[in-house]
Image 1 (cartoon, rainbow over the protein chains, first blue to last red):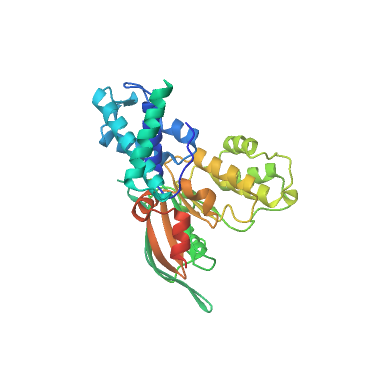
Image 2: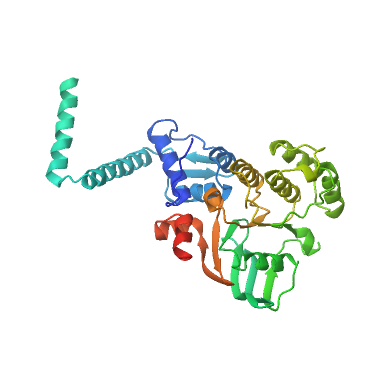
Length: 125
Length: 233
């Protein structure tokens, strides 16, 4: 895990985002153990308190669970995976739309661009 | 949540011709890295020296909530001054032995380990060290102690980027948040930004803004560096 931190956004949230991405990409799966807080802090070069806060938040959001003396694990729950994917998809779509708007496209135009692109992909298959 | 390791209230200090601290109130959270930022003459150093017991206050209170009150206060605060306070005629090895005699909690093993990491050698003479090397050595001498509170006054000022990087890397690598709190006065916010838990903005002997770094980012949508530009306009 190597994070390019954006200093204008809470760093613990960026740690959480990175772990979510690893889950979606399949590098981490349900039931997997997360690295110890200390280890992860060293690896990504952040303050151990920041990793502690990220783990605490993830636990509150139901993403991970901490087993006493054993460590922190990705929750073994399909619903969690579905939620993460939904959330990341929403972010990706929203980023895309923001960018298109900043390029000067109108709503209808954005939609037709998406449709054209999807159609081209279908044709190529 | 965390308790405060240091509580300062209505702290005042006057030097001839200047009111350096105008009644400062602030809390330093325990187990965190607190950054104190502000322009020259903002009172950062004065405040840190009063907390460390190096100069006396005119008015106000400084409470230090140590775990182990048996020990002398000076044993629980490791202070890194902005100036080069090292004896120039000594070698690094002699300087380490000197610190071992001065501080009960000084670990020469730790110092040797850190010397390696910082690319310094025992036989080097302090007089021959570059500014960056002196800065690295000063940090080693502080990190080799097991003091509850580390107070670092401009540990990154005026040194090369590679040394700055090394210093922050070892500071964060050695940081033991269960037993230690760090206060870092710094101008070099670019490198330090990601490591700070708590930030205090100071100017002309007063606190302008303070808070948890990530909470400030979330609230203002800005980096600490951008906030500095705004606060000190």
